[in-house]
Image (cartoon, rainbow, N blue to C red):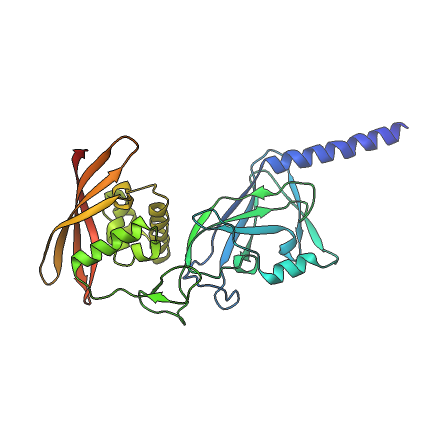
Length: 317
C-alpha cells in the first residue's frame, strides 16, 4: 500500500508539473525566407513559417510532437473582417481518417526552445488575393486532446494576385470575381475622386490603386530611418504592415477617414506633379465637420499617384 501511494503521488505530481509547464510555454511564429505569396500552390509557392516552442518557466517543458505535424498544430488565417479561412481539403481528409499517429516526446530546459519550419499553405486555403492575419495553435498533447492548445503571436501578410492572372500593378476589383483592375491614364482630379469613392465603399483594392504606399509610409521620419536601413524582405514586411494598419484605421486616420460627401475645389498640375484640393464633410451624431484636403500627386509612366497630403480643419456645421 505504501509503494502504491508513493507511485500515485508521483504520477499526480508529474501531471501537475506538466500542466504548469504548458502555462509557461510560449509559441512564437515568424515568416521564414519571406517572399511574395500568391493564392493556392502550396508546393510551388509555399508559405514557410518558422515555429519556436519556448520554455519560459523554471522547470523542464515536456510535450509531444507528431511525425506528421498536422496532428500537433493548426494554422488559422483571418480576413480584416475577422472571417476565418477554411482548411485545405487534404488536411480535412487526413484528420477525418482513422489512423495511428506516431509522435516523439520532447523535453526542453528552462530558457530553451525547440524550432521547426512548416508550410502554412498545407493547412489554410488561400484562394483570393487580400490582406490576412495568420496565427498558429500548438497542441502539446496532440490534436483533439483535452489539453488546450497554445496560441501563437499574430502575423500580417498580403496574398497577391497570381502572376499568371495579373502582372505589374494589376489588382482584383472585388472578391469572387476574375475581373482585374488596372490603373488608367486619368487626370489627377479623377484619381483623387476615385480614391475617395473607393474609401466610402470600403473597396480597398481600388483605394490603394492610385496610391504610392511607400511614399505615404515614409512621411513618418522614424519609419523612414528604419526603412532605409532595412533589408528588401524587411521593407516589404513594413509596407504590408502599413497597409494593414491603414485598413484597420490604426494610423494616419485623416487619409482613411470616410467623408459623408466631398467637393473637388481646385486641380493644378504640370507634366509630372500636381495638387488636388478637396473639401470633405464628415458626419457625427450631433454635428458635421468640414475639412480641406490637399492631395499631392505625381506622374509615373503616364499614371498619376497620390504620394502625400495635408489637412486643414474648417470648423463644424
